[in-house]
Length: 423
Ligand SMILES: *Cc1c(COP(=O)(O)O)cnc(C)c1O
Image: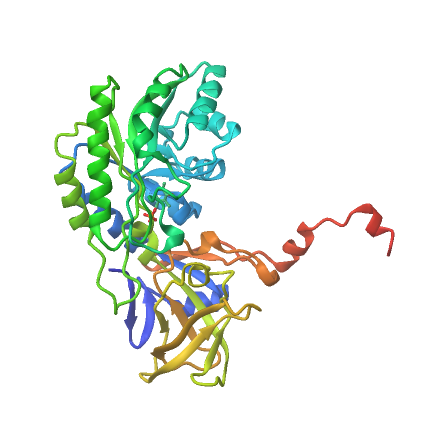
């Protein structure tokens, strides 16, 4: 459910007409709804209400905008970060370090030092060499780092190959079969306080079965580690719950179904459970608003050329992702069209032969469910300005990241002395 609705024939987000935002900020622009964010946090938290003090750590990489993070911080979420930059963003947005988990396969010594200085809740380690480095860094600071190992359960998440992370051939985590040996080695590292187990098998999961299979393995490992004398106090079950993109596909499991499964599977584990939802919190809370530049004839369907491109929303070109594309002011007519951006790549295609609202030059369209892995992946390919972002709350709205002038892009490059003399 979201808060993008049609009132008197035109799309609004909460109480703000989309057209008003396009008029004031220009297009393309990402638009986020506070009401939808709030609703999703509530639904996810309610789904876990049978658990004792779960830590819900929002996966910052899904949407790191400071205003979005501040909204989620106010609602009590923690953060799952995968870089020093994300860690700084989370703290700057008001998320206490005691609610921050640090994931990622390539943490550097500098990033470890920063996280230790701030006093984060947990490092999710992904290899034995990483454990050794963290122990050394912590010792050099006179500290002990609270850690879990992310295990690779060798479960097929049944999602797109580029967002599947829990198969043995993927780069993530330590092999399940080696876990006891890795934990035994970690216990001997004096800079570490081994407190938990972590797992994350992939994103946009539309079936609970692979998640359950992974969690069952985590439960067995918690028991085996305790039997081996480890004081396991946390289990991090990762993120990954899918959201509906294409109404023609079956609806992904609800947070309530997910919560019920987790509550059942983790019964008797006697740990604090951690969760790292990203997409399910922010996905439906955002849309990419764009204007049609022109429509050109195609061999079959017409090409609708919009002012958003793959640099603004990479998911279709990167993951073959499907986004609903709606006219902001639909005429009522529908027809098949190809929706493309202006970038000089065939991959800059949002939809082919899509049955959609008929649109013409200057009409506004919205790419729905673009709040997760949208603006955060935007770039400046083809020397396009970075996409701005707007946050709406009721009848209020604010630019929460401005569109930088293209001059700043050009000014960012530095001409070396030997080229200056040429002029
Ligand atoms: C990306 C990521 C998440 C969030 O995944 P979603 O599918 O957005 O819920 C959680 N944990 C880790 C370790 C991740 O890399």
